[in-house]
Image 1 (cartoon, rainbow, N blue to C red):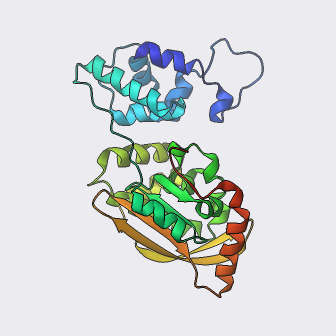
Image 2: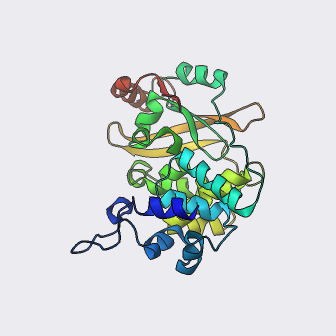
Length: 279
């Protein structure tokens, strides 16, 4: 594990993580230990112990933070966790199968067009979206499918601050919902919360407030670069007992808001009918 971390640290430059490179050439390839530690939210001494093989039981949360900074893929992150299990003498964990969107929800994605819609898991990972859904949140479709998450988008994508006309309310609702997943999906919840707490002081402050409520319905105001100012109703449909939900933004036919969704659908035609992790 120590060798793996040293090698990957050497492959990530300061510019890759938003740090200034400074004048002249670096004697150390890639990130310095103190830079990686600061970005991951751990002490330099603790990270040095991990990289030197003297820390034999780093938590999944710490390893998740390191994986995020080092830009590890899902397979590489799983490999890092496996190396940690080996180092600690634990039974190797089975990697959970990738959650697939329910077939019925995929049909509904197409049926509700031009309403933007998403199939979400318990921590708001986007398992699938129709073209209008990707078009409504500019830049979400540019992220790899495994990184698409509406809470991550709200706090980390620069477009979110503009496209959500009431960003503070959306952010608060998102964090309150994520707290509801702590009981049923503790691992993914902790991993996402740790990532966002390290990357966003605003998320960290809201997370500490321990507000909890389930998002079921309501209205959200947008300031969209293509369709302008529009307020859309929200419906959330739950499927079965696996935590998957269909979130739909909609407007009544004949209204200006519905006309705006038709325009959004026209601009989204090139994106295809829907996007799923297998695309």
